[in-house]
Structures are given as C-alpha cells and as structure tokens.
Image (tube, rainbow, N blue to C red; front, top):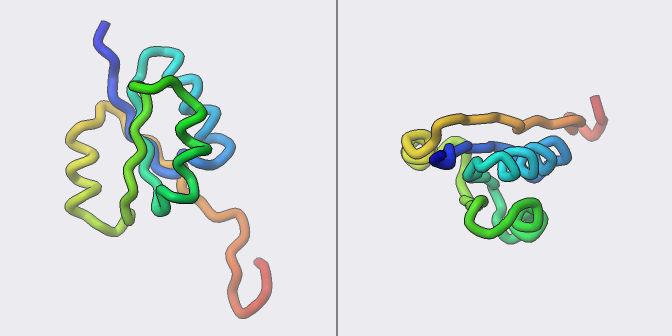
Length: 92
C-alpha cells in the first residue's frame, strides 16, 4: 500500500505531535509546516521515524508556497490556533 501524504499546519503543539505519531504509525508521510524551523524542528523530528516526516518553514500568508504544498498532499489538517491573545497589555 502506498503511503499517503498528509500536510499539517500547527504540528508542533500537543495535539499536532500526537497526531504526527499516530499518522506515521499508520503509514502516512507527514509534512509539517512551521514558521520557525530552528525553534521547532527538533521537537517535531522526534515524533516519527526518518523518512515519514518532513518539516517545511513557511509563512501561512505566502500563497504560492502554500499552494505548492497543497498540490503534494492527499490530506491537509490545520491546527493553528492561539489560546491567549494579548491586546492592550491584557490577556483576553
């Protein structure tokens, strides 16, 4: 069976890391998009065996790069979110 390609945005969080482990155990090749590869790559790389995970640095507003990533993916999962947003010096 051919491995399916899964594109994950926000994969460095708790849910994302757990999802990466489950997908790669079920023969999915995962591409994780992160905005800062130098901060998050080690944490993401440790979630799966080599060959099943690829980390790409991209700005989610870079439309051309995101379109190219979509073309290679069978599945796309968005886990980008903010728990606390800072406005005017206060947490909402």
